[in-house]
Image (cartoon, rainbow, N blue to C red; front, side):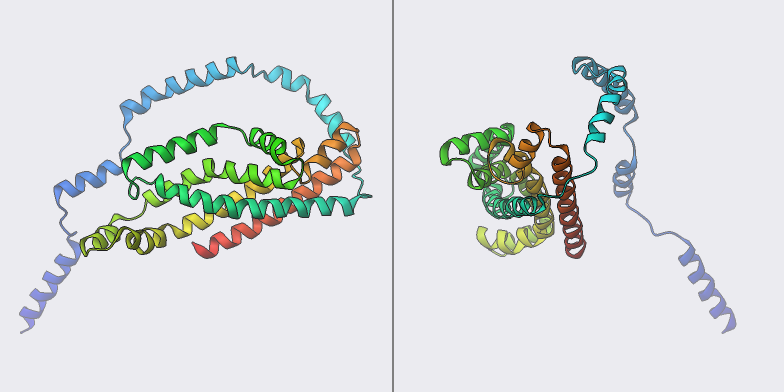
Length: 285
């Protein structure tokens, strides 16, 4: 009896010490995932360096010129102090307008981007719609937001409405592509299972794709909102509402104290929004 118990315990120890067998094909696949393509990697390094040096030369990047201009930059920064908060009420009012523009532009841009993303997802849309949606987003993404702002300013006049329209249209090109890629990257298992039991396309999208992509979609929408707050500041430079017009006026009038106060308030607003967005992203992920 004792010998049997010893043999059984010895067999148990050997089985515990012996690693589980793995299929050779599966082992090769897993090892390939961690292997570095050394040949291509070694060839790619000099090519990347050549392209980088070529870009430095074409862009006329000059460290010596940068060091020579450091004195001028220091002089400009010294003029920003001390900041002048005598027009703090005006700054807050325009920052609220900028925030309102960003909220409306994010909501409208997010909704339209999601609709376009359905057509730009290869696992949802037919081929013809996929290429049409992708090309549309490429064209929109190629045009700077300032061009859209100038177009809408000429159409609806100066003010925040033109800025909202520019942000909404610009969002389709940028965040729409990310929405589409998030929906393409979902796990195919639930989708295949739903299709196997006869689920309709709408049911597959509603219950198989969107629930998986939802955390990424929310995270990207928050990122869009942060970008729109900063973008609304730039759009104001061409009269599309927000704090940007006041910023431009202060620069043209050489009112450096007021300019410094505006920059400090913008930094404070962007920081608060960034921290709030980070908190929401942590909760949903």
